[in-house]
Each structure stands twice: as structure tokens, then as C-alpha cells.
Length: 598
Image 1 (spheres, rainbow, N blue to C red):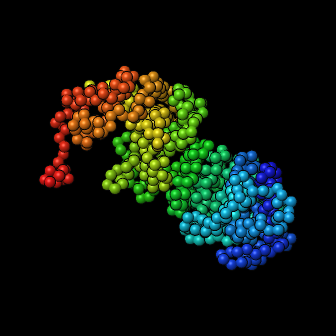
Image 2: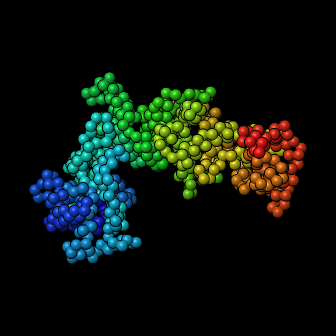
Image 3: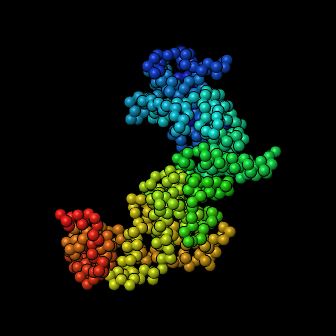
């Protein structure tokens, strides 16, 4: 077995867990559990204790072991107990730290309270078992010497009926390892022996070879809990690992082993149906969000497609999936979306078949908002097959992508649904941004002010919608027809890229992004006072005020700008501009009629 190099703090923590287990096993102490003092011997699951072993054993499980072997930082530790529940062990650990045995030990001299902590162990939190929220076993949480620890007993699972929520009971290390999603997450570090334990016999090999493999036959693993299908994809994309052929075969319905093609197709359908029926949409969203926020979203999308899962994930859930309608445009194929995802990744890493100005892409590559902007763009790209699709919601048709986010993935409205919907809408507003398209017949508007108003309408810093991101996504949408069999046609792509680049450079040269986001010179009260108009017309008038600002920002001194804007606005209004005089009549609503009668 390979060796884990522990930091000083980790080494002391493991020594503490070992010492506490030995004290518990040898001294048979008592602690208060649910208001009653009970001895370890009364709480211990004796049936699992073998001759010569400690009556209480502790192992660090799963992700921490994997990450330590990969030499990655890992701060959250899951401590698995052999014969005690997590909460009960945490109570005994607290008692050990207060005992004379601990204070007389050499460990006590080294294990001082962590920085900012009043003691070695913090308050112990107890998370009750709640099967309806996928919390199948009681867990305890605590900070021990500044490190976050979860305590839970080794367990085995038994599934009943159609539920993906198992019946949990105490188990052996082997049973606990076999119930996990993939082999590299099923490793243990035994704090007593200082050794890694690989009960599946594949964990270390798969970690070294970069393979995602289930501890049991994938059909068994996925039938028990279909969520593990998505977790396999997530971990494969996170680490850049290869998915084991058996997983591919069962999820794609391919004959393998002694299974016929007909049997394989049936198993595939059962697993896909189980994923839709057994797994909550919240869990869908958690896994997909980790994929698209992770280090390799394009690989995650490719795997979802290859495994036949793309449509299951990125489509409104039943029964809305049967009510999707195309709104008068061509369907975006799944492969075109994947090609777009690869192009986006190549642009971010500077290896695309064409280059864009650094000033355009830099804010998407680096900076405090870069990752958040990328996440939204990955969602917009993943949902490209739904770009021109709508579904009926409350007697109106809504973009199917927004419904997928809110109903299918249960992600937030403000941080995901609204901004991704805005990107989808902005792609149409910015489509074919030739400068001549912004010329206008309205004498009060100019090409410059039209572009500035468009930019203002698109950019939303609070939602992390930048012009750079919206313009890039619009360009990617415009390039969709250029993709054929996964490759781009340069003759098709070049003029499109040039058009978008020219638009970006024009915005930069005219400083339109800053001008578009400036605060309006006149507020609503000033406009109403100047024009003696009704307030309901403000939403039509305000854009003209902003247009004047954009056009005159560098021409009028700051102290004169407000007065000149008011003078221009009055002149335009009196000459019949902005809103035609015949349309300035206020509609006689029921409320207004009552006011007139009074």
C-alpha cells in the first residue's frame, strides 16, 4: 500500500483518535447520552468485535484518503467508527480530552487548543437521521484542533422497493466500502495501524490508473442508488479519469459479459427510469452544478452525452418534457452544443482556431467574477438544444431552459435561472452586431446611443452578466451553423468572428460600456416637472435621457449637463418627439374613473 504523508496537525489528530479509542476500549467509561449516563459496554455493538481487536476502532474514510494520495489539500474528514454511533463517539472523545488519562499523556503536551479555539474540541453538533432528505444515519460534527470532522459509524445498506433511501445498520469495513459510489472513494486510513485499507482491492489501482469504477457490478450499484450514475460522471470530470467500460456498457445498453443485447437494452432503460423516478431534482441540481462549476465542464458534458444521459438532465422534467414546442427556428443538435462547449473551453485556454482580443476574454479568465461568469456560460451552452424551445407554464409559453433550471435542477432563481435566461435573450439582441444595424430613423437617437442603450439593457453586474460574456455567448450561437460533424468550417466562421470582434472594438473605442452604465442625469421627478407628463410615460422617456447622456457625455461640461439635458428634453417633447402627441392620452382605468368622480 502507498504511504500517506500527514501534516503535524493531522498526525496529532490521528494519535488523538487512536488514544481515545484505546481509552474507551480499556476503561469502559460512561457518558451522558440523551439525559442518561451509560457505559461504553452497554452502547458498543459487541457483535462486531473480533478477538484481539479494539472494541472501538476509528478510520478516516473516503475523500480525505483519496485527496491525500493525490497530494491535494483536504480539510473535511469523515471518521468512521466500528462499534459506536458518530454522536456517541464524539461524546466519549470529549470526555477523554477532559480525563486524567489524557492530561497525563505526552499527547496532551502537544495538543493545545487550536488558534481561535477555546478548547481542543468544539461544540458537538448532532444531525439526526432524516431519510426523506437522504440523511440516512445519525451524524455528529465537531471542530477538533481546528479541523472539521464528521463522525458516523461503519454501515451497510439494504434497499427495499422503489426507494433509493436504504435501511442502514452497523457494518464491517468491507460492507461500508462496497456500498460506496466508486472505488477511489472507498479507501480507509486506519488511525491505529497508520495504514491505508483498500477493501474493494481496486481503489489504489484505479487511483493510479485514473479509472472510475464501481465497487460492485455497476448494475447493482446504480440500481441501489441511481444518483451514483451522476456522481460517477462528476468524479470522472473532476479528476479527468476514464469511466470503466462496464459502466459505459450498462448505461448505453450495450451487450457485455453474458448479457444479450435485448437484456442490456432493458437494463439501460431501467437505470435511466430509476434516475428519473428515484432521485430528487434537488440532487440532480447539486451534482450538475458541481460538474459545471468544476475544473472540466466540457468533459462532464461529453460524458453525459456519451452515456446517453444528456437529455435526461437538460430537459424539463415529466410531464413538461412532452409539451415542448419549437418556436419557428432550427433545432440545435446535442453534438453542436458539445462542439460549442469545446470551443468555449479552447477560447478560455487560448487554443481556439481563432483569437479574440485579450480585453474581451480576460474578465472571463481571471478576476473575482470569472468563475461565476463561466458557470453561467456553461449552463447557457449546455442548454443550447433548448434554445428555441418553449413549454406552457401558467397559460403562457416559457423558455424551456428556464424551466429545466427551476423545475428540473431546482437551482436558484437569482443566481442561475434569471441570469442564464438573460444570456439566452441577450444572444438574440446581439445577433449579427454589424454597426450599420444600429443606425436609426429616430432623429433623437444615434448609432452610438442605440448601441449604448443595448449594452445597458444587457449588462447586469448584480447577476454577473457582463457584456464580454453576453457577446461571447451570442457569437457562439451565431457560429452554430458552422459546425459540421464536430468540426468548424473556417469559411463560415471567419466573417462571424470578425463582425463580433469589430463590435467589441467599437464599444471599447467609444467607451460605451462605461457610458451605458452611468447614472441617469435626471430622475423621474425631474422629468415629470420638466414635461408636465404623467408618470406612466417615464419608462418610455428615460431611455431618451440616457441616449442624450451617452451621446453628449464628452461634449458637455459636467456642471452644465443637467440643464442642457432638460432643455433638449423639453424641445424634443414640444416638437412631438419621444411619444407622439396623439399617444400621450392617459388610459381611463377603473381606478382613475373613481378618482375623477370623487
